[in-house]
Image (cartoon, rainbow, N blue to C red; front, side, top):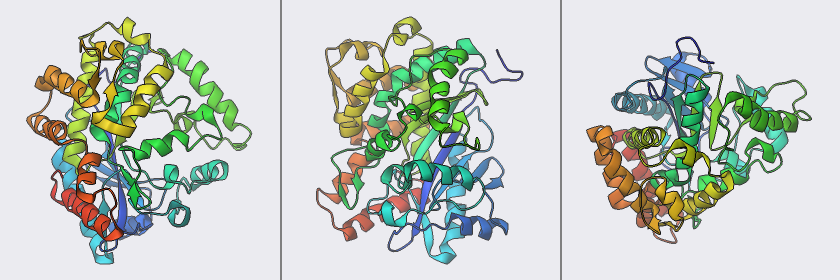
Length: 409
């Protein structure tokens, strides 16, 4: 049923950006977000309200999130707002010798030794996750992402949006991958964050499923197919009922029926908010086209099984834009009539189709990604195949300057 005053498809967007707090010189992670919040507000809090933007803590004590305080009808309007908050946060961190670092994974953090969970409000949830999964691995302690929240007002809208999101998830990392280096060396994957994300909850596989959500198109079916198995899997561990089913669902896109939105979670954080928001605009414009049946009907989109989509996703997180997609039926879902195409070629085709729905700034920044590759590729071009720690500090220090100055690498 539609909620009173519910937002309809594409009326608004909610955006969340996660960054690491690190030492300004060594880039070592600094588990001191609580100190940052205390310096700014006078006490240790979980959320810092700053007008249109809110700051929040995350699972680990070295990660801080900025988010739209309320859903916004204009993604591009938040570029100066997020950029201003980045600079405000850096100014607050500077006296203690710290700064924000972008990118979806720290290049040489040792999460087994350096992960420290948030110890304040909501800690009981994080502690329970730690008990079940041991949150010291890269898949818990070293990953930063952009979350994109898109509204639906009723079951019909949910079904259309969920269908389109499932179709698009496999190729999103071709634009957004920014985690090519872990443990001080290139991993062979452009989106190593998602490699670890795919395996970090193997003890309870019901929580993630196949990462690509199942083909369910109503709230009733979603509860039956997805939420009920999650609740059953958690029951032996969550005796006090600490975990909410919305929170425990860790698929690449999750339904938030409590807020009437689908949250997309497979987007690596970029080097500056302008790049994140450009990717958000591109995703929204593509989903609009899919929902509207620009290329094929919603009925044909629904026919895809999650394991077939996951197979494409797993290739894309390895090679990003260079991935060869040889599934002509998948390319057809976006109106590309070819036997095969690289993920970058598919995105160029989509870009030509939807570019008029993007702001001028988003067109420039998506053009930069299509011309020069995802951020992971640009990072590797600077580090080379076998960087030492000094080289990593130089390259990732440049990323930190990109963040502070609001420019792309």
